[in-house]
Image 1 (cartoon, rainbow, N blue to C red):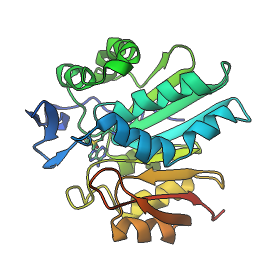
Image 2: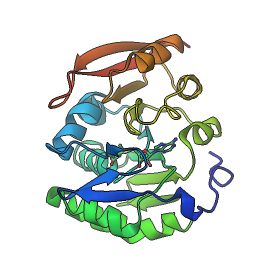
Image 3: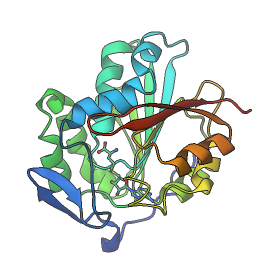
Length: 243
Ligand SMILES: C[S@@+](CC[C@H](N)C(=O)[O-])C[C@H]1O[C@@H](n2cnc3c(N)ncnc32)[C@H](O)[C@@H]1O
C-alpha cells in the first residue's frame, strides 16, 4: 500500500474543532456527536462489531490476517473496541490491519480525554496514546502488541481510499451523519469501497439513510436494514456480492 503519498503534513485548518458537552466530545464543524451519548462502547459493539459478525469471524479466522477499513477515525473508540476483540479472540499469530481515514484529527489532549471515558479499554488506550503524537506528526503506521497494525490516513476519505491497494474484510462506515457531512457520503466513496472489496467483505454503519443504501447497492453490495442502536430506528449492514 502506498501510504506516503496519501499523507500530507496537516495544516491548522485540518484539526478538529470540538467542544465538550456533558463530558462528551461534540464537533462544532459538523454539528454532530462522535458516539452515542447513551453508551459509546455498547453502540460500537452493536453497530460495528456485531454488524460485521466480527466475534465469529475472528474466532474462525482461516488465514492469519484481517483488514478493517474505517471512514473517520475520530476518538479511536471503534479502533480500541476492535483490537480488544481481536486480542481476545483471534489466533495469536494473526495480524489485524486497521486502516482509518481522518481529515480532522483530534488533538492529543482531546483524544486522551475521550478515551478516558472507557476504563475497560484503558490498557490499550495507554499503548495507543503513547504513539498518537507520532501519527499527528506524520507517521502512518504502528504496531500494538505485535498483533495489530494501525494506519491512519490523514486525508479526505475519498482521496485516501482512491490511493489504497488492499482488500477490506470489513468496513466501518462512520464519519458523522450523511445529513451533517454530505461531502463524504458520495457515490465516489461507494465506488472506491467496491474496488477495495471481495466476496467475503462486509460493512456496517449506524446510518440507514436511503442515499447510502442505494449508493452501496448500486456498486454491488447487498444491503440489509437492522434495528439501530438505542434511539436509532434502523442501521445498515451487508456484504459485497459483485465481482
Ligand atoms: C463520528 S466521528 C467518528 C467516530 C470514530 N469512528 C470513533 O470511533 O470515535 C466522524 C469522524 O470522521 C471524520 N471525517 C469527517 N469527514 C471526513 C472526510 N471527508 N474524510 C475523512 N474523515 C472525515 C471527522 O473528523 C470525525 O473524526
